[in-house]
Every structure is written in C-alpha cells, then in structure tokens.
Image 1 (cartoon, helix red, strand yellow):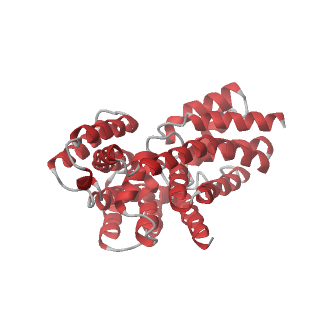
Image 2 (tube, chains in turn cyan, green; image 1 turned 90 degrees about the horizontal axis):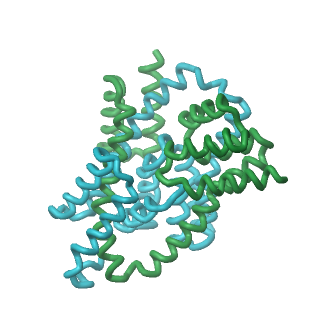
Image 3 (spheres, chains in turn green, purple; image 1 turned 120 degrees about the vertical axis):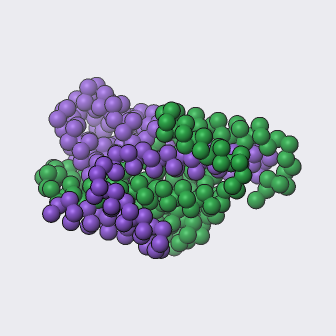
Length: 183
Length: 175
C-alpha cells in the first residue's frame, strides 16, 4: 500500500512537470523508476518504452499504466493512471476558471522560453544514460542511428520504426542460442 | 445526462485514435469538439491550444478536462478525462499482461534485442525535434548549455533543473 501510494506520487510529480509532451517526461520517469526507487533495471525500462511507444494514447499515462501493471498488478494501473492525470486535471480547471488572464504576461512567456531548451537537454540525457546499457556493437549502432534518421530526417512514424527494429532483431539473432540472449 | 454520455464517448473515440501523441491529435479533437458537436467555438479552441502549451501535462488530457469543464463543470470534466484514457487503459493492460507472459520466450527476447538500440535512436530523435523548436537564439543555446552542465555534472533532480531553467529564462528574457 505504501509502495502504491509512492508510485502514485511519482506519476503525480511527473504529470505536474511534463512540459512539451511525448518523450519529454522520459528523463523524469527514468530518474524515479530506475534510479531513485530501483523498481526496474535500465534494460527493463528500455523494453517497456519500446512497447509503450506502439500504443495509441498519451505516453505519460500509458507509461503509468504499463509500469503500474508490471510492478503492482491491477491496482498499479489505477494508481498510476490517476497520478499521471490529476495534475493536468487540476491545473486545467484552475486555468478554465481564470480563463487565460495570465497568458499574456511577458514574464510567464519568458519562463517558458527558458524551460524549453532545458527539456531538449533532459531528453538527450535520457538517450545517453539509457544508451549505456546497450552494447556498442556495429549492429546496434547502425540500428540506433538508423532509427533516429528514419524519424528525424525521413519523418517515418515511430511505430513503424519500432516494428521494423523488432523484425530486424528477430531475423538477425535467429542463430543465437537462448542462453546468449538471456539477461 | 445525454450530453455527459456523448462527451464520454466522444473522448473514448479520441483516446482510441490518439496515435502519435501531442499535437498530432489536435485536428481530430477540433473536428469532434468544434465542428461535429459545437461544444467550443474556434476562438476558444485556439485559446485552449495556447493554454495547453503553457501548462504541464499532455495536450489531449488538457483538452478533455478543459472542454468537459466548460461544458458543465467538474463532473463533465472528469467524464471527458476518464473517457479519454478509457481505451488506453484496457489496451495497455492487455498488452502488458501479454508481454509479461511471453517475455522469456526466445522470439520475444530476439525482438527486444533489436528494439533496444532503436529506442535509443527514438529518444535522440525526440531530442532533435524539441531542440529544433526551442533552440532559436543565443539565449536559448546558453540556457541549454546551463541545463547540460546541471544534467551531466550534478545529480540534481530533473524537476529542479526545469525550475532553474525557467527562472533563468524569466530573468534573461524578461528583463
């Protein structure tokens, strides 16, 4: 119960500080789930992201539900989903009440201009840290750079990239024995 | 009551087709909310987008809460938001259970070995897309450098780094 509540708080925090949407919440989730609480290894975390990216919906909420299920079963999904949704819910209701009066304050805009570059750096740091657990074989490097180029340069949808990578993984490693692939 | 049910199912629909996340879903929300149901006018919708950019949280959740609240208050805000996450809830739980069951199988293991480097590439691509829109002048590059020092040289929590960068932004852009 105590752990469930802690899990709820983790995603509440993440929900309250996710600016920029999508993978912007990744460094925060990684810090909380892998580093601070040790609920998952980096490998397990990367695997989870791959699966989560293939599903429709809000990444932060899906991550909360997926990790919640894996860590704490059914109640984990409920606590995770509520934790990740509540901050936006409260903030939007307050915002709808005081409808947009603060939007045009220059200082508010200035603060957000400052936050955005930091988000880019934070996301990059997640790639660096998670990349450490992936072996630096030529095969893996080509897959990583290829995936990045496919998305950034060719505008290919991430879901297609993920499915392709899974198929490549299956084809390329077919000769390997079960033991070599076990972590 | 009828409106509440309509609201719920409209957001179930939006949640079920919410591929790509973030702004990719906006045209769909606009069609459902502004054009099909007339729950919000065009002007309010644009304000909603602006507001979503300035507040934390995913834009589709923001939209569901905001539209629900404007429609009939707190309860409809909750109904819209729950509707939005409803499809994901079932899908994600089912997928999580399936993956857990077969995770140790040989084929699944091979697939994940291919996926890991791809995920690193994916995250790098997200960095590039955020960087493109946020690194726009010397000041923003300086803030990024400042954040990079905090991220890579200290053990500061990401939330503190976000707050610190916001403060620096407030000072150098505001003054």
